[in-house]
Length: 576
Image (tube, rainbow, N blue to C red; front, side, top):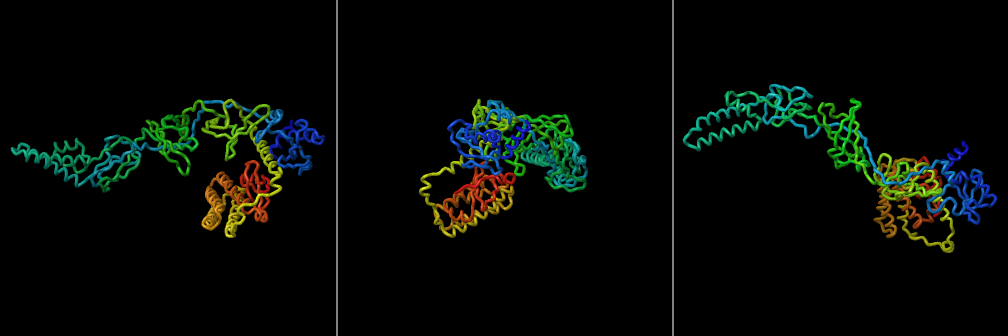
């Protein structure tokens, strides 16, 4: 049992040549005796090393480790591009498990961090419409609770005193002339009184104060300012003896009986969140207590730094336990998505560029599929395309199967490249565009230098100078486009210019995707315009069997830009 586990672990390390490694002992014996494990009369496709499936040969012999090469027969281990067949015993040994693709009800609870803030609709300012000196404060510190209509301060204003005097004179004048025989005189006196009263009202003098002035005929030196709302004083700008201008905000009063909580929702979670959904909140200083509210608004823009959308949740706060600027843990209960085709999360292999699922076809046959994923729930992904309801998908050891499948596909491609083509052997096709101008070739030589710098940075998992090198490439492409280069060369230069612009990123995954495009264009230039000189300079074309991508190096020491430092030596040189 220990030996069997050791064999499986070694298989994973050396490239996951799963079938070959487990059966290498038996296949080697059969190869020596000339027997075919797949049946009599089957053709040998190639030979490969038992401990390194990436080492292949068209003749029998020894591997670099001194082991006999294993023959691979036609139809052995594969039934087409990418599909792989594994011995049922091996499937059991590596613990392959699968699950049925079904339609399910997907649910997701979004957990995030929220910040408590004031309800903007419940914030008011207390100010005056006249200028004067504050003589007395009734509310004299920040944080004080006030009721609506409660006294805040008294202010002395000479203008207010003069207006009261005018009102009393107008009142006396109206009393004297209201019995006049001349209706016009009486109306003027009444109009004057009314305008004086309105002036007092516009300065927020209450009806009770005006009535008191009418009864007592005593002019008040100061005006009392009352609170326009219930709440707490969150900002105070009023000081005794201070002169205040008309419209100056003296108090900021906030009602916190209801509060807002701003919750950060990541981009991939936004499709789940809707206005009206319930949310729960808990705080560190009140363990065990849960507050319940509802989402009232989702902001229509993204926060640049956090890459999140803010959701506004409203909570009742009758006991003022929730304090503005506190941080809280928020859970949003989203609506379930019913009748959704879904696969388990553990069934999906994320490779950066694509998502892969291994479909169990039965009898040891496995088929890797590219799939398009939709919403993500707690345990499942919605599947938009790639698999059908009723199929079975592998949910364990799928990385081993996927690696074996990629290996099979890569070897098939390498064998196709090695097949002789009679027409090509007789007459090689002429190179197109070889007659390019020296000025264009000189600029492209510079581009190669910057391209190699970018390749090395990606192979080292570094972002250093990539943007700068890409800018130099764009500059050279601009010169070619503005020169008298051929139309075909200008088309290629236009593509490289666009692809170099895509290298302006701080995300190494996106940079590698952009590098794939510019590599393909540079390979096209090398093959169609500069094949002879490129070979003379020692430019080498490499192929990554795991990512199925090509790149060029100015030397033969492999530095894989797609897999980085962890697997920098992965790759094989190709002829061009």
